[in-house]
Image (tube, rainbow over all chains, first blue to last red; front, side):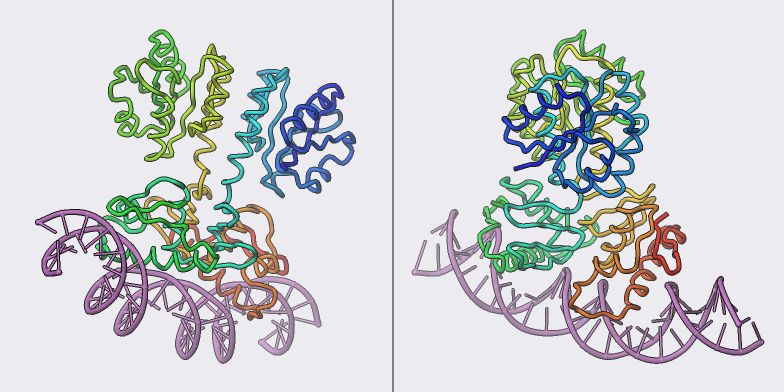
Length: 220
Length: 220
DNA sequence: AGTCAAGGTTACAAATATGAAACTTGATTT
DNA sequence: AAATCAAGTTTCATATTTGTAACCTTGACT
C-alpha cells in the first residue's frame, strides 16, 4: 500500500484529502504539526507527498529545495491560484506536478497515480516483477540473490524491459548494442541473449525471455 | 527550438494552438491529413505530440499504442470530457499527460514545459550540465565525443551526481562501491577516482571533481 | 628546509567481458 | 526423409576492468 503524506494546514481540506486517498486504496499520513515538517518529510518515507505551497510560518520553496537534496520522493504541489503555478515552475522548486485548488477529486487521483507510476521507473532502479534492475550497480536482484550483468546484457534487458510484453526485433537489439559502422557477427546477439538467459535462469526465471522465430524476443 | 506536433481535427483549435505555441517559442507542426497520421508521427521526429483523442476515422488508442512501440516521444492527450480521461488512463494508452478542452493557455503551456522537462531526464539518461550520462550505455557524452565508463566509475559518478555540489565522503563512496565484508585497499578508491577524472578530462572537464581533503569529493 | 598526512599516479597481474568460429538443436520447406 | 534455416551453445583468443603495491605530489606544520 502506497503511503501518501499530506501537508496542508486547512483542516477541512486535509480531512477531505485523507478520506479520498483512503478510499482510493492509499495510506494517507496527514501532518498537523508544522514546526518540524522538514524532519517528518524525511522520516516518514512516503511514496508521494502532497505539499501545500502556502503554509503558516513555512517557506515552501526552501522546504522543498532542502528536501530535494536528500530525497527523490515525488512531490505534488497544492496551489491556490494559477499565477502561483508560474512561481512554482519558474523557481523550479523541484516539484513533480501541481494541482490548483479547488481540485476535482478525479483529476487529483489521476495525477497521483500518474506521478507514482512515473516515479517507479525514474532513477536507476527499475522493477521487472519482483526483480530489481539497477543499471548503476549493473545487476538484477531477486530474493536477495544477485546476478551481475555485463554492459551488453544490460542494454538487452533494458530494451526488452522498455517494451515488455512486446516483440523486440533482433535488428532493434543490434542497433542498441552496436554502432552501425562497426561490423559484428550477427551471431554475437544470440551469444549475448544466451548469456543473459543463463543469469535469469540463476534467478529462477529461465523462461523470462521468449524467442519468436523470425520476429524477435519478448520479455514476458 | 522544440518541435511540437499538433494532431487536432478542429481547424479553429488547431490554428489557435499553433499561434500559442509559436508565441511561446516552440515550433508547431500541425497535421491536416489523417490518412497517414501514424507515419507522420514517426517521421516528423517531434519533441512532443499533442494528440486529440477523438479524430475522424482514427482510433486514438490503437494509434498511440502502436506509436509507443516505436518511440518514447512524450504525448499529451487532448480530451473533451473528464470521463474521457478515465478511459485514457485506464486503457493505459501510454500518454504522458492529458488536458481537457476547453483548456486554459497558461495551464497548457505549463504542462508542455513540465512534460518536456521530464522527458529530458526520463529513463536512464541523466544530465550533468551539457554532459549526457547514460547508465545503460555506460557512458558520458559531450559535444559528440563519448567516454565509456566502467562499472565502478559509474557508481562513483552517480553518487556524486545525486549529491551534486555537496561533499560526498570517501566512506560513502566506499560503501556504494564495495560490500562491507569484502576487504579492499583504501587506496582503490583513489585509483578509481583518478581514472574517472581522466575520462572527464578527455571531455574537457578536468576540474569537475574537486577534492576536499579530510572531507571527501564534490562534483561541481 | 624537513617531516608527515592525505591523496594521486603508474605499472602490473588476475579476473572478467567480448566477438568469432564451430557445432548443435529444432522447426519448416522441399 | 533430406535439406534448409534460424537460433542456441561452447570454446577460445583478445581486450577491458580491477585491486594491489610501490612511488609521487601537495600542503600544513615544525
